[in-house]
Image (cartoon, rainbow over all chains, first blue to last red; front, side):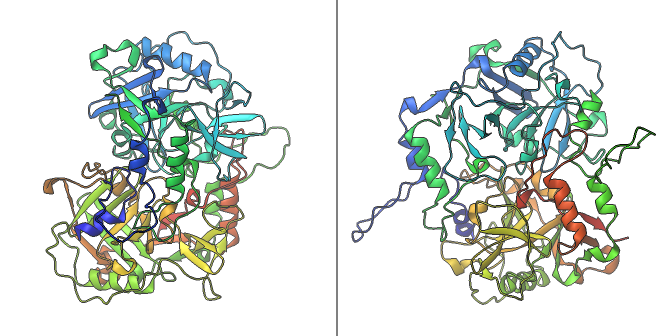
Length: 299
Length: 299
């Protein structure tokens, strides 16, 4: 049965390429996603800038978050201020709602916030010529168009553009008032994309490494919202730092595949139409939240 | 900050309805999803039939699966045969791939299978007049139309209908040959809906209770497919039984909201357009995999 277990999911692009014996001539085999990724040139990859990267260090390991350079400048600046002040160190993940979000902050409301001015909502931005946006060919029910900005899932309708709530999206918790988010309560999407949150919250970035550390945490049971009801259930934050403020030897240096290169389009096409031996029915479609952008360690 | 944590997600329909003071007259407040669900009549709910219900009992608790009555009769019959033979008892969850699936079966391939005839694929069925299907008004990129059959997410295109790979969908692992699935390797979707699997696998049912027990398991690291690499990492299956073969006193009796009732349409509409005080921008859309069908214990 092991072969069955394995072969059901040739989805993973880590599957090694098959080796072909000297069979009769046939149509050329389409490249696997692994082969497409391997064909990328060094310049097809973008290295995360340590000045825009956060490390959420948990007892189980490190979560690497990239902050958006294009969508939420005021919120990103506030979050950097908080990280530089070591605001979150010793605080905790306080909420884990199944199929929805992991969230952290100051559960007892005792940590003094550094001075942060009230921010505009930044729930979307103007889709002007300064915005980079690589469109997907596929329709989307939540927006006129979807695609990628800095390889993060994004969407636009008319003049509005925003980062989409896909798996791994990082957002800023807020109260009912639109300008009430200070950046000190952050959440990460851990389940089916809750796109209804789009344009209602500032999405500030994306987890590029370590999602499994968040998504596998025990679910909370409080208030029907996944709150950890007892302090001892909370998951302590060892540190949440800007990568640029961590010694170089302790950094996790990552590269993501750039969305504006032909190899990215080839990768997406190989995911839209799976052509390995397992698939009988290539979908001819992909949802922006189903595009798992390749990430690799810098060698 | 606690109010901020809570109010970000008035999404949960457990949020209590606000109490209104004697304010000036205003437009009537839309019902909350909790109020809509509370308004359902007893006949708006469907009790799971123990003859179509599986209990996957893990050390951490029980996962309740309903087998489809309409889509995959041959596979469902095979699975019932396996459960009645106690085939899975003492076997294990062998795979946990982040944002994808939990899967169980016979990792060492030592358990004798009861006699099961080779089955037709059942990856889709004819959308004939005997199929119940409540359509969603919203477009879908993966199928001509989406909706619900027995309150399970489903899809159809032309004459084909199938159960959709949403969070909690249960499918039958197979090898490359379409008829190679015997039903003894089952997987459950634990992340963003992998709809590319639609029409490539037999989806046999849906988890109605206990998803958090599967989705919070440690991720495996083997083969890039989330396999548990060491036997001691596997999660033992205490028992996997048909509910009808479990003593009544030990059953978990559930009801799900019927998809063919007006109250279901009102519930979906309240999720398509969130109108509580937190939302600024109702989406006017929902993905079939974002409809979290209400489930309750039988009182």
